[in-house]
Amino acid sequence: MIRVILLRLAQTIPLLFLVSLLVFLIAKLMPGDPISNALAGQLSADAIEQIRQVYGLDKSAVTQYFIWLKNLLSGDWGISLTMRTPVAQVLGESFTNTVILTVAAVVLCLVPGVIIGIFCGLSHGTRRDRLVMLVVQIGNNIPVFWLAVFFIWFFSVKLGWFPVSGMYDMRGDRSLGDLLHHLFLPAFSTALISMLILARQVRNSVITIMDTDYIRTYRALGYSNRVLLFRHLGRNLLAPIVGITGLQIGYLLSGVIFIEKIFAWPGVGTQLFNAAAGQDYPTIQTGVMLIAVCFLVVNLVSDILQDWLDPRHSGVLLS
Amino acid sequence: MRLLTFLCRLVRHKLALAGLLILLTAVGLSLLAPIIAPYDPLQSFDGLRLAPPGTPGHLLGLDNQGRDMLSRIIWGGRSILIASILPVIFAALLSLALGLLAGFRASAFSELIMRTMDILFAFPMVLLAIGLSAVLGSGYSTVIITLICSVVPYLTRVVYRDTRSEIAKDYVEALRAQGASNGDILFREILPNVATPLLVYTTSLLGGMVVFLAGLSFLGLGIQPPEADWGRMVGEGAQMMILGAPHIATAPAVAIVLLSLSFNWLGDGLRDLLDPNR
Image 1 (tube, each protein chain N blue to C red):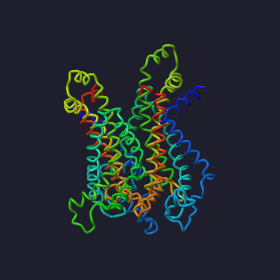
Image 2: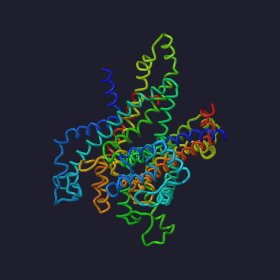
Image 3: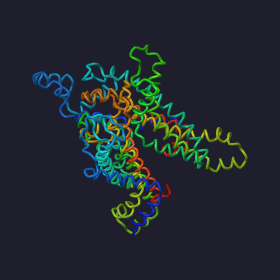
Image 4: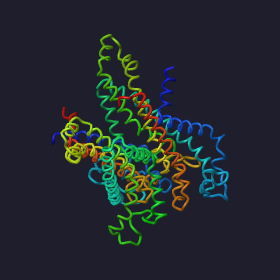
């Protein structure tokens, strides 16, 4: 098992390195450099040159990359160009908010998705199953941003059940209840479509597993459905569920960026939009890197969990 | 003749037929937009702002600037079709080349290609779009690059996997024994065999890309005003929806769903007909 974990890590680290290169290049592609752009006309060319030296912008791109990487790893993420505060401070709080939203979305995706998937898989081919699968297919194509707007209109404006946007009440006491009240709608909007996709894939796994010879043998031996369901199906389902969930968390993280914008949720996505508008490249770089790292870590954990749950999964790795 | 029988079989596939009809309607409407659209998509009728669907002369109502929704949707089909289909076709050709190259012979180069695909997989594409918009500004170039980068890793993996499995088959061995050149094996024998699954997969991916593209426009990273665009119409309609005029955001959203479903259904049909084993 340790060998598998090490192998997975060895696969991930070069990826991280290359992603960081990509992120660095995005900022390097910007026309001009941020100091000259921000200060041109306000200061003399000499003064600008001095400031560029302070920020290391006079060095070669390769040197800049390694300085940036070193700083990134040591937690020195630079100063936001638009807010004049450390990037760590700008992104720190919003990152927590994004994590809260994502975790809530994962829970809302996983629990109903698995239940619906198992239910449909067991009643495979019936009218109920086909109806649910049609809903899944249509839901799969509904733009998540429209759905979010629709939910705001329906649940917040028409019914008045939930607040329209934000994370806490302006005059509230920032209590947990207040947070959950604000959290439900954005989390639900993020989760719904992934939940449908998860349900379909769980269903397909259930059908495949229920069709295997050993389940058929147990059936023939007269084991009840309940025993098969809990003792055998459950075990075999865990690995695919972990795999699909790992993938869906990736989608959820991307979806969260849309949802944050729509619900004015103060997370990394919102910060990134502001940063892009202000060409605040230290914030863009660090924010993108932060999300990409989460993405990779989630995949890593999900791969390792799958290896652990289903030895067949890592067979390719070990051979 | 083979094409004709194929089309006949495709038409008999109910879902594929539905998908094909929706797609052809969308393409037809977009091409004929200047003739078919009842009004100029930018002309505003001041007295009728936010008028609901069914207003005389305006089937789908009017938006917050008093512009005819139906005309805007017909015109908006142009940008979404162009900005989704063209980059995906380009990406498919690129993936075909990359996948064949990487799959044909294991080398440092093929390793490099596949690792690059892994990075693109690991990179949330919305973030790429945000980053690019800071560099290139919002518009066609940003969304087209983002779309290509989103599609290429999926398609390259499919081509790579299929190329690898074809290479291992006996007929390649037999051809080699007969003295066929690498080029012949690659382009005459393997290419046709991997092209079919690629076509199927590309068609299904297009559905998701339509929604993704609309999402980028919704966020303001895509096609810029005043050109009509479905994603941005949903974005502009969002505020109006909260104020009690849901049709402005919903009509283009329905158009997006239909177009996306049509690609999915067509993809399902193609898969059933061309690739029955999968």
